[in-house]
Image (cartoon, rainbow, N blue to C red; front, side, top):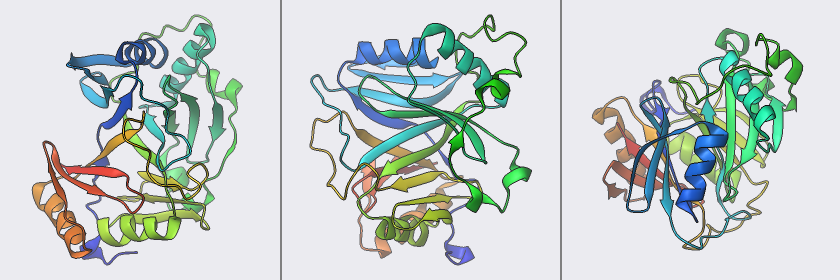
Length: 285
């Protein structure tokens, strides 16, 4: 664990995740009808999507872009819903409207539903369990079958429960990345950026966070197979956003990146840095 002076600010959170897509209209239709996001802005091959007034995803169109599985990059972007009934309403909608899922899991710290968008970007919708249940016990985080009946039981009638969109209060809870090697990635996120290592699965996966959360950053080698970043023009992660509480906090992290031998790039939203697997991160406030 980094010394306290080198730890990232405990109120650090995640902001919008930027993705390349092959067909912007197709993606917007999917995210609106299947996921329940709203279009906040659209222009010049770019769309900003969110819940309420909160921007969660930015989609950038590159016609003909191909999915980038088998490379480093995005494993999934995880949208944290404000409560368990919100997750149940979304699942009831998915069942009624035939939204294709790729998994449903109980992670001890949370309940999660997984799917893939038309460009095969991984998505997770989840709700946290009460923090006092898992505080200090994140090492128990694992994967078990989700009790769907118990989740849906919080609704009076899942068959008729209305669903129009994801509720306000939905945020990007964490970003899970495909990486080439776990040790070097942990060294970057923990020892340079200052996140705390909350749990690890040997050299296969690691989970890091700010402020004692179960994880803001996940990393694994399950799909990347030690590979390089995806080729240009792929339907891939463009960058994730790390939101610091102040310019002072952000600049302190930037300084540590410089000391580690990397020159951060200027970006309209802040400073862009890259982890050892080539995943881009924008540090902002």
